[in-house]
Length: 132
Image (cartoon, rainbow, N blue to C red; front, side):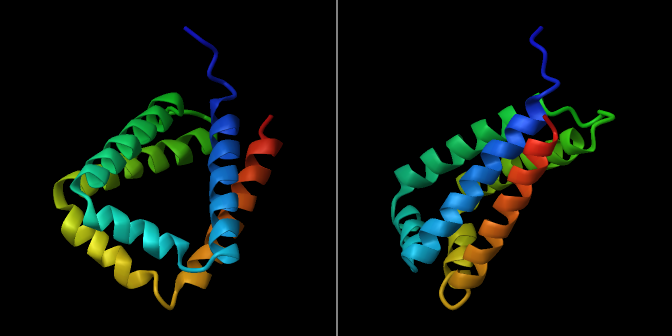
């Protein structure tokens, strides 16, 4: 069995990098996320592929970061992985309703979501680096 003691640190670091740079991308080019979600809404193939990818990543995060761990970061990331799996199943089963919900949230609140992504990303990067 591989040693997964650093899995929470690596998971937080890579999730943080993703969130940070995704937020920067949206701040740089406002409306990008809205367009992305509209494209997913318009394509059943993208809906299924998006749900499958998120389900896979959520399962990997959930499995690599045990819930019953003395490490608080591992437990927190296990919850994140589980929530990703639930969201993925929502996307697969109810993509029309679920994606329409998010399309309505990205118009005027795009900048707020972008900054939240940047801040959460920086926090995850910091926590991940401090966990090594």
